[in-house]
Image (cartoon, rainbow, N blue to C red; front, side, top):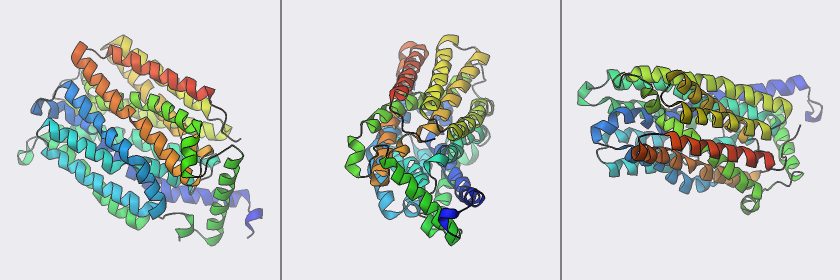
Length: 434
């Protein structure tokens, strides 16, 4: 079969086959990754009183994860491109699983801060590595939908993980002399180690290594990726390491990502506490978990719908900006409604839906003009700078709560940042292809 004359049916079937092989496994990897990153939000409900941690201590500790993440992310992604996804992603997952289990032995603020920082170092490179890995398999025209499907793992990790985390803390508490939060870290850290080992067996470094594709299918995927990379030159794209850092679009997108991530992790790490304060019994951790499923369940649907619509229309900027504005509305609601249960849950749902929808389409912007080593460096830099917001958001809420006994001022600031990110996105030059 000549690749130049391949039928649309064959091409569609080929990429469907690729998606069916890769996305479910990457989805599973990201579920366990995200659980290990954010389960501290549930652990806080019991861990903070046990160890005497204030809101400021918890907020700083939750966020310091992203300092280690920031420092090591760019080198990690460049190494992934050099040594291959299989080895490097397996290393990341096994290492972070072990560190996550280690949280069960935390006794002091110092060790809480230290392990959160090391966990960030361990996980650095995983998410941008997966985004880079997607560019090896899917051309730009298909990538937003695939990224959205992969990133629904964030929502599903919370939909599944919230009630599971609540149940572990409520029903395992006291077993073998350990508190529920200790069991939480142990039981949710072990799967990362197991799946990290499976990565070595199930993940291929790229299409040319995929024995589960026929030669014609491998050639087709390689051709479409080659065409996609060539088209980036027409958009003024960068292809080498230094080129990524000279491109102003990379810096602008890093700011946009920061604006969204600040709000996302502020809400994510504090959501169990915020829901508990809507009137839930302080000992009913399972109910907190079940209520947490609502915002994340709606967000899972929203991000797939928005990502698919973005692919069909070929439009990216307004999908990103519009989603950020939806999140801003949710933040304003939380600032205004106080402890109202219904409006508070609605505000949380708008935030999760808006931010996850923005993230699902956001990564189609840099990958539209970056390729090669520039893609590895640029994606990692955008993600690492943006994820510094994961430090400032939770830390800001903790400090404001302790100083004012309220989160109102924090959510006004988060809403303003979301609006700023939307405006920068709209003003950027177009980098999408129809």
